[in-house]
Length: 70
Image 1 (tube, one colour):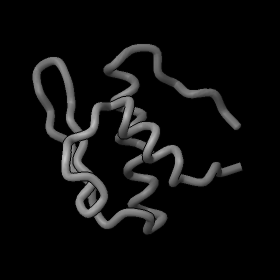
Image 2 (tube, one colour; image 1 turned 90 degrees about the horizontal axis):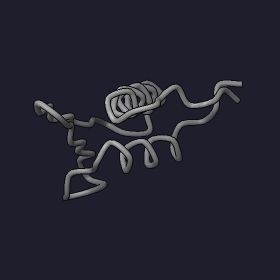
Image 3 (cartoon, one colour; image 1 turned 30 degrees about the vertical axis):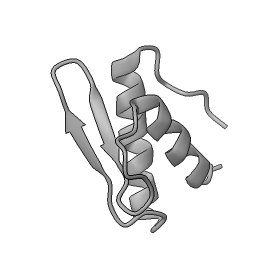
């Protein structure tokens, strides 16, 4: 299993988006929305969470759903 490739909030948010896209491809979620702000992002997973998720929370949620590709 490869190590995470993030080292700051920007790269963590990028990694969370990548995992979200993998979850979409695997059919684990029907959709997710990312709201981009000047200095942060908010993640929304319809039917799972009514409140926005931080990049850290989104990463943990998507990581729990996405199976390792090894």
